[in-house]
Image (cartoon, rainbow, N blue to C red; front, side):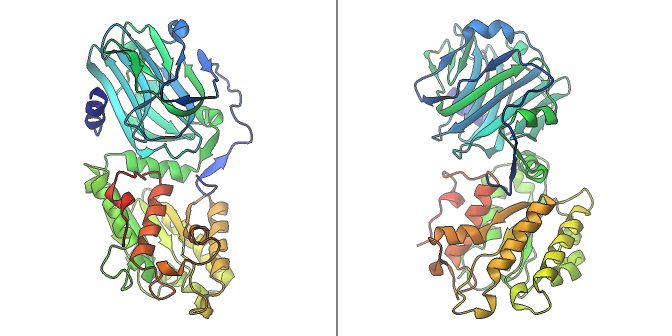
Length: 432
């Protein structure tokens, strides 16, 4: 129950999302005071006791704790590393994966010094490196080399006097002499540094590094500051007609962000300026009225289905238009974040003038890679879902996704942006 209370109180990938490092765990200019490279798989009962090394970290008032892990289950609380007083309840410093979210908590005699969770989730089975850096200015959460959450609280191990136990994969306190919050999955490494590492240093220690734009999107999702999300494109983004009265993919995304992520994210706004029949040329021409006018922080663009059937937007023009749109988004006040989404594949037997749509999806991938833009690749995902063929049952007319197709688009978008929670209504929705 204590962990559930903490969770409630703390409300206050693919190549397109990350850049692999040429070498993992490269040496840095600073040496950790604790560095345990276990590469061990924990089963929800096992743990590693490092209490003999607690003196190395127990008095630190600032520093960085770093962990590399992958999960095999989703539990309410799973400990990566915990320093605690096993004779008393609620005196501990923990880094946990809690219902998928990254959590850092410092408590002394039941008094919460700080307790924060991300909204972004890291229990997808992939290998992640996360870090918590604390100095006099506050606490910063990093995920895969990028900052994703910053808080003004600045408590570290020294904020919980009396720590004598140090464990990987469990927490140990007076109420739970056998341990609690056991971890399931692999933990490759846990390290503690006696100073707050820089972003570059943390990136060097990470097994992969997310795109800078992906880190910025994660920061927006984890921030309590309201943001404007804008989705634009053609009739598919518009959600015209073929959803049969169900929500379109931008509407599903809006429900996930504005309602399910909790307050104050319901003060975010998700705006859909998709227009039936649009091409990239149309968006370039009408960028001011369809994008700039709304002052967005994130701009999602899904276009190509009409470009491929329009003689004036041949492949080289489509490529140039995408590049220009990315530049326009980044030039918006505050430096908005572009997000590219490939269109779904279509039934070329019914729409033979779209037979080259796969080439346009490939061009979008290439532009995203060239310009370091976050890409959500629906075209590839749909073909994989159909076993290499177009899943015709997800299309209303062979081109436009129906209500089931829009749900697949939304859930792919939500999963790739690391806010997928199978307990949510949007993520668990099944349309008969």
